[in-house]
Structures are given as C-alpha cells and as structure tokens.
Length: 364
Ligand code: 13P
Ligand code: SF4
Image (cartoon, rainbow, N blue to C red; front, top):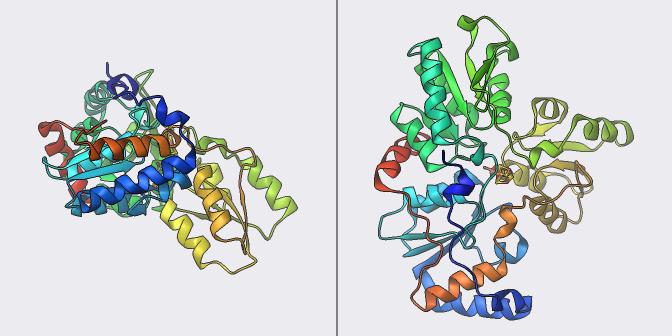
C-alpha cells in the first residue's frame, strides 16, 4: 500500500547553513541566483505560500491558474512553490526535458494522502459490483498523479474548486452516477449547488471499505470519497453563529473545502482566486471574515488595510505542509541550479503521466 508520505522520498537534504543564514542574507542570495538563471527558470507560487516565497514568484494563482500557466511554460526549470500534487500536475503538463522542482519534498497535502491508488482500485471494483457500469470518476486536483491516471483511464476528469460546478454537471451527463475523490466536502457542496439532494449522496469509507447510504441504492447519484482537508475542518458553524450574533454586518467568505454546514451558513464560497477577487472588489470599510488558510488571510489583511478582515476562526494556523516551502529551501533550489544541479525534482512516470493528462485535459 502506498501513501503519499511513504511514496515521497524525503528528498535531498538541505545543508544546515541555509537555516543559519539570516532572512536578509537569503533574500540577497535568492535575488542574485534568480537573476543569474534568467528565463531558464520560472517560479510558480500558490496563494497559500508565505510572503517571503511569494515575493520571488513569477506567477501566483489558485490550483487551476497554476496548472494552466505550467502547461504554457517554456523555461528549462519550473520551481513549484506549493504542494506535491501541484508539482506533479506541472510535471505532467510540461515537456520531459523541462524539470519541475519542489523545494522541500515534505510539502505534501494531507487530503491527497487520503486516497491512495490501492484503496481506489478496490473501491472501484466494489462499486462496479453494486452499481455496474453507471459511474464516472472525478478527482479534485488535490490528489496524487496515480489517482488522476486512474480517473483518466476510466473516462473521468479532474476538477478544481474554481470549475467544480462545470465539471460535475458534465460528469452527470456522461453516466448516471459520479464517484468524487478525495474531498467529500467539495463534492457535496458542488452537488448541492447543482440541485442534488443530500440523501442522494452516498459516502465511500476507504478504511472500512464500506458504502454509507442515506437512500435506496438505485437512487444514489453521487458517491463521495470520505476525505477532507484538515485545515478547512477548523472552521465550524459555531464560529459563524458567534459572528452573526456580534457583527451581523460582517460578510462571511469561505473556501468550498469547508463542511456543508459552514458553506451553507456563510455568504459566499469559492476558490482562493474567488476569495481574492471578492476582497479586491469590495467596498473600503467593509467587514469580512474569511474561512481559508492563514497565509492567504494575512496577505489580504496587509494588502487591503482599508477593509476590516479577520479569520473566521480566530485561532487559525497556516497549512503546515504548504509552509514547508520557505526562503531557505527556495534559495537552496536556486543556488543549486546556478551550480548546474537539480534538487528535489518531481518526476511522474510516462504511463501515469499519459493517463493523468487525459483527465487533466478534459478540465483544462
Ligand atoms: P485553490 O484551487 O482554491 O487554490 O485551492 C487549493 C487548495 O489546496 C485549497 O486547500
Ligand atoms: Fe491540502 Fe488542505 Fe493544505 Fe490545501 S490547505 S494543501 S487541501 S492540506
């Protein structure tokens, strides 16, 4: 059985000296190395990255935007400041001669880790026994390349939080039912928006290998994989109730990886790009509570000082794995490239990449 963490070698070891250097020194060294490398490198940064990393990004974006940008890149090396599944996607969408680097191999995603390929193949066999050939698989891009390949070879597609409605609508025109991996919350929130009833959604528990039903088998339209994001699970309906009572004028804006109850109780829900766009378009003086990762919320607070922005959960932390990418690791990756060495390269084998690309291309 392969899990994301065991799947990932811990990668090349960064010399201790990078941890001992001051931020100022690393800043100067990273700037110099980046200038020396010129257009041979391109740095992509997800919105959840720390400011010290985002500062060096040639492009920032949500998962969809970053994969679109990666697909068009011509640079020899792409340094991906994000998490492992995002760098895998970039490797799948770029040419074999281009390298994709994840500055710290420990930057995984606990949600992607909740669906491994063995569990998925087993679930598929069981579900086919119950439902026959009536299911199309969809996977959130927050999944391993092996899961994307599984979805590709079974006629399905990938999905991100910014196109989930479109992709789920498409899937339901293809077959009678859909299996949505690995985030039950994005799957449920999207299906509800499209008018599917909660009772028509079953949950596949990959640990117990069991289907949790709320209606007769023949009425099941959506099968949700029992996975979640441990960061977004920290936003609770009680946080919304407290705010509504104390500050009814504060708008509540969350990521759709939050639970159904939280999304239903908030005013708006959407991808990281949607969250940024909403704040950018908002009136000065308006009040917001945001339910997403803390590096992004802090950046919005500092970028828009004339809006009153707080985290929906006052005790929220950043995503720990996203946070593995820091200035020392970025500087190290850049300086090694200057010396002609590639560290922490992400390589998806050709067969997996080909099948995963079929799923990604339907979305892109
Ligand atoms: P976005 O696609 O909205 O950027 O989300 C990625 C992610 O990992 C959210 O937890
Ligand atoms: Fe994964 Fe959640 Fe972190 Fe996004 S915020 S990378 S889904 S653990």
